[in-house]
Length: 274
Length: 326
Image (cartoon, rainbow over all chains, first blue to last red; front, side, top):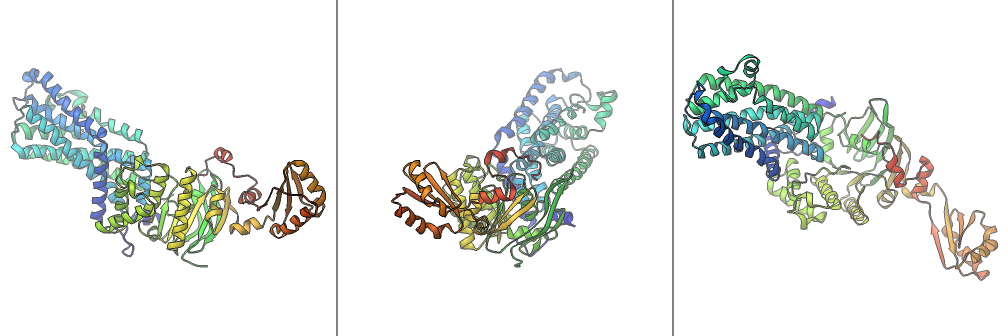
């Protein structure tokens, strides 16, 4: 009986507590404040994404003429989605790092002793992380525009790409948050974040999917990053394609559902009274 | 028995591997009193406080806080208790004002009430000067005081303090003591505190329980516990050991518990205070002029030594196994 009492949101109306939206607002705002106060964790992912965008574009861009099916004359439009995706993957750790810091400082326990719902404790940092992801994607796209990017679908397409980056990053954030809650250790959480790095290469990273072969093609076809990359490329270089975008949304949805089931489980284990 | 305090009955906590952290303890804390839970590291103090503050579940037994059951009415317990745990749980990146307003708003206050409450509390714990600074710049004593302020945000009826002064310098320790006294006396708050320091319970607590190896060894008021030992002494110091020796020869026979300690004659007895005039008269009759005369009452350390067979000496505590700590 005790576990269900502990894990359930506070429903006792006689006890003073904030409404759920207020709780979520407080936790999200507080997470954003701490993120902006540690710029050393915030800036490198953006810097690295911009760096790769410039490097890939200038080293591979001139040699891209032989690649068929690029769908555009510009390699920039082909490689930009990779840059956006890699920034959103490194950004996916932001929420988890914040959470593990709270566990280590004991602030997490302090919050548990207030009438806060467990859902707000989980969703607040993730919402803050999503806002940061969106911000990072804006910066990377802004740099690409300065480098001469022309979007086939205009401003709306750029925002669609940002939206996909946020969805994908938030899905992966569910995984790093689970690692943070499960391990309570900063090192383990950082390790969990590194798992995504190879995933960006088990995808049609530098050439379109049709040019991949063998096991790499198989791996790429079950990697959600593949579908997000393809959708972003299609939007930026060709135009709106419902089927491609639909596949990307479905991939994000499946990823998100699996990761959040894991995160809820990890939260239950962490906050269970023993 | 008053329901509004803390009532603990046969409370036990076992961890995997047959580690017994609490072995069926019982005690009660009267509302409005200060209760000192005293014991060395690993005795079970933190386990008890974690159960009482709803962070852990008991393996057996029952505990109520303010009349609410800590297992089945955990939310109610949390709403009427304030908790400052041993590890100060503060986010070093936030300011004291931010931490306090978040806490106040989670307890249902609106934005302006929360701010006002934060200002009040910062004044109470004398951190007004540091209000805009991040907690990372605070000293250990300031962090403890801020943690105390956080525990007080929702005006709890009962305050739980887990080793509130461990690791503090003497001046900060005294600050915390004054604060605890003030809260108890001016707000009539019930205070449950755990400590390794005898001096602390002697200063603050109305009632003490000494816990060791998961069991309560003795409980009562500090004065009662000390009196139970009956080991007071009158200490008469002389200019040199020769004079002390002469004094022993003259009045030693009247006090069988007397002992010579270099230039000091120690007379052990019960009811020592009442015997002082007679001792002085006898010395005067023998023309012996003492340079000082003091009265020693048994300390809680003596009590502790008697009930646990060990002294609460710091380096000994460090060596204690940590296995029982929750």
